Image 1 (cartoon, rainbow, N blue to C red):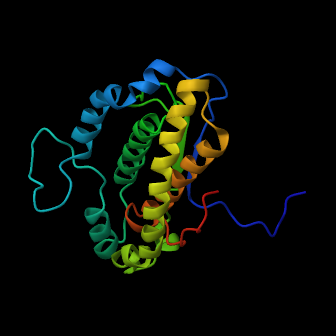
Image 2: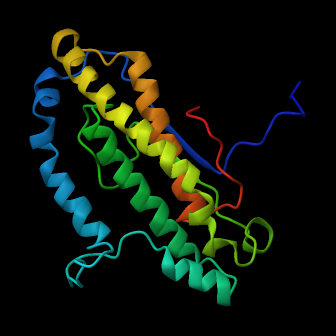
Length: 209
């Protein structure tokens, strides 16, 4: 019998399959070199970004559609489905690249196949799931998450370095370290789903789970 008191799943989800096998030691050792080609592709798709040095480059895509989505929500109260699909699929691709760099998988990132990284977001019912004006301030409301995630990410970098040595000598990614790194990825994506994508007004949980 289902638990009627159980909390509904958060509308931004991430699961990465644990590689319950020996990982490729050679590709793990040289991961920072092997990742370069797909990082270049990810950079071209993501666009030049923001900041004083960002310039319009015609052969780059635009990256995550944040400001246009906020404007559309404010003045048309609409989230175009193809904008949502672009944000979702770009996030999926970026996560596959990030998972490969973090040694969570030794399968080279695909530009379109899901592989072992399972990320999803619920397409919002704008009139029901998103409140008028809130997209303007959600980035501010999410600052506590950003502060915590900064420290968690430092820990994740250390966990990846330890895992690198573990894979080198044993061929395995320690399960506790794997779950921690995936948890940090998951927390980041909930943060982005709330503040910048934006697909939900439900405040993200302070949890790696």
